Length: 87
Length: 188
Image (cartoon, rainbow over all chains, first blue to last red; front, side, top):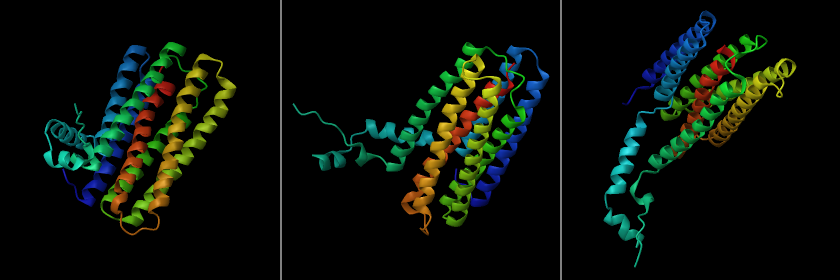
């Protein structure tokens, strides 16, 4: 999806805001829970959510699928022009 | 018999190959971090020493998250050919990265007094933060190289992937810290 400059910059602030909220939540969880398994599970969930935000919106993970599809199609399909040039 | 090997360079956009190659590398590097993170439980259990500096850990986290925002803004500026903003954001990212390195240095100074590398938790802390700060340092160097390369040009041109690649690497370093922080500071 193509975004305008303003939309992209706004998205950056929204993502960093969510990351800040989750970091505070992480800290509150850590001081609130004594049970190790529960704490580990909650911290893992928050960590995965934070990582997903960064990977999806800052690292543009979504565009990767298009590239994989390109390579998949290109590898399976014969390209006579390129092959002739190579010969 | 002739073996015919297709030339992939004729078939794919170089950007496709560059991005896939970078992601492949990031996934392989992530597996290294996963192994190190899991070693925390095996080497020192889940307890965290009371002496660990929580304020410093939280500050380092905030610093790295903020640097991800400036890195993102540098990439957005590059895509929109706003060279001045891009350079400023690259410099801000590198600045915060350098502060992060100093913060980890101070963490090590404190850690040496309370849990040296000979202890279980010390082993985990020095290994995890050591490997991570090496990644941060290479990120700073890469961003510095990109800044040096683009500092005098007026349009981004063929250098867009250089900015994108360096910024992606920086975000990867941030993602790694997202898991290192709770593993070292918050578990009990």
